[in-house]
Each structure stands twice: as C-alpha cells, then as structure tokens.
Length: 465
Image (cartoon, rainbow, N blue to C red; front, side, top):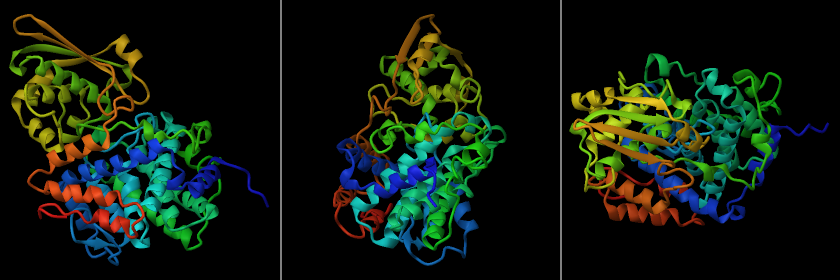
C-alpha cells in the first residue's frame, strides 16, 4: 500500500533528510544566536515562582537522571527535564517569536533537543540539525492554521509546539521517515492549550512551553518504541487543523520547505513584553534619549495597527501578564526607566513586576491611548508591528517618534554578539564573563560528542561554568 503524500508526511520526510552540513550558511550562523538567546531568557526565568510550583508538582517523579536542568547540577529523565527547562525559559514573554505563526518556537524546541541530545550523546552538528528541523516544523504548522487557530482560543506555542519538539526529538533518537511521521502523528493527541488566561488571568500560560516540550519528547519516545500515529494527523478530516482551527493552508507547510527557512524570520525580543508592542517601547526610548522627561508628559498617543487593538491596548493592566501584553504600559515603563545617557534599555520580567507596583508608571500608562494609524497599518507586517508615539508635554510641546521596524525583527536582527552582550549584562555578578566566553567556545565545538551536556554545564551563582 502506498500512502498518499500529505502535509504530515512532507514534514516527516523533511525532518528525516535535514542535516546540519546541508543547511544554508545564514541558517548555520543564526542557530548559535538562538541558543544564546534561549539561555539568556532562562537565566532570569529560573527563579520565577511558577517554576517552583511546577517542580513541586513533579516532586518524587523526576525519573532517571538522563538530562540536566538549566543552571543547576540537578538531572531528571528526558521528558521531565524538557518540561522543567521549557517552563524556566518559556514563561517570561522574552523568548524568540514568529509573529505570523503567533508562537515562540525556541523555548519548546531547545529544551526537547538538549534533553534528548544529552541522552543520546549527540554532537553539536547533529543537535543543531535537529533544532533547525524542529523550528521549521513548529513555525510552518503555525502558519498553516493561523489566525483561525488563535480565534478559536488556542495558544500555538503549546498546540503547535509539540510538533516541533517531537520532530527534533525523533531526529535525535535516530528515527527514520516513518518513525518521525509516527512521532508527529502521536504528537497530535498531545496538542492543546487554550487562551482563557488572557481573559481571566492565571499562571497556566507560564507552563505551556514546558508542557509542549515534554509532550513532544514523549511522543518521539513512543514512536521509537514502535507506537504508530495517524499518517495524516495534521491535515486529516478530524486531524489537528480541522479540529483546532477549522481552516488549513497546506501551502504554508510545503512551499519552500527546506529552501526558504522560516527560522530566519523570527522576532528576537530586547524586552520581556509582547512582540507586537516592541516598536512602541522603542519609540519611547528614542524620545527620552532626545531629552523628553517622563514627569513632563501631559498626554500620549500610540499609533497602532488594528490587529493589536483590544488585546494589547489596555492602559490599566491588573497583573504582570496583562502588563507584559500592554502597549501603553510598555511605553510608560520605557519613558520612566530609560536613562538618557545610559546603557540600552532592558525591560525584563523584574522591571515589569516592579513597574506594576509604581504609582507614577501606572498613572503615566493611564495617560496613554492607542489609535489606529493608517500609516502604521501599512508599515506593519505578519512578522512585526510598527508604532508611532506622539507625546504632548505639560508646556504644550509635541514630540514624535516613528519606529517602522522594531529592533530584533528580521529586517533589524540582533546577531549572536549583541545577544551575548545582553546576556552578559543580565547575568553580571551571577556568571563570570570568562565563564560565558568559555561556554560560547564550547558551542562552537560542533563535532564534539556529548555536545549538549557540555552546553548545559553552565551554572549561575557560582562564578564558573
């Protein structure tokens, strides 16, 4: 019996044939920066309260010590390690983003690949090839079902993420095309994650990346054990796309698969806020560096595209999650926290949390409104959002700043050296700079066996790696 060529089988064949040595140079050069960014984000997330709750929930069930937990000497089985590390890195709104696919691929794919790579003793080349395939899988599936998937109430880092984790894990487990297809088919039964938290609050979004990473690894392990999955699990009549989106564009998966790399179209985040509010925060930083003072502001207007109106325009957030999803609050933070002649502004989770408790920042946020701006609408794309900030001072002066493309967007990428510099700034006093330099050198040793174990050997608070 010959199986019909489906989107699921197309992806399985792509993952099976992907090798690091065959990747285009720009993809090879991008991957180390994505890894640095994953560790950068995780360096802050390791102390988040929900990480402790997640680990407490797993107490006594961490399994055999097969893979490392980030920034510690602790180890767990590959499924739990992927889950914990995904929660550590994927809970701060600081992770790499594909705006069109509406998801965060790195915080699902890296924890899955590094955990399985430790178990198998993979080289750097083997692991990065699997990661590239995992990124492409999660992003292309996301693109194939958006925006209908989001409109149904699903968070695609969780739902689509399981496929990217399964692809990378299956590749590192040495599965052939059939085995990888089975892993993707099994992963479909793990795909879930609703967005009611946007409306009602809660911490559940903070575990979505970890849940997807762990489930993807588990799906790959079941496939390696011989369990089968539907060969048309993604596009079938009752498959992932029809069940969870009701709309499906197979061309988003097939067009340019293996030649046009979506991981080159990521938005990297200088701040721990929604990718769609980065341009507005940058506009505020520009005005402060031009001499504007936060306490001299009477009113402010952010010109935005219609796509963010409602969900990202609340100027009076009630909790940290809403604050990270608020364009007015991001602008208020940038106006209040930018030093005119200081280092580049970094709005991390701690800054967001502290700003939420500051009366001056909250008052400033309430002075800021968002309006749909036709020029900003035209400048914005499926991959990034532009912004215009117009401020009226108490003396009646008007100040304006336009950011057509935010820092970190594909057209203004943050390369590995800049990401490393930000990483060093964020971990100053926690990890010695020399230790980070040694760690980067280990990343470059692509042919070394047990590469993942060497990369995971980076410990915070010890002054050494």
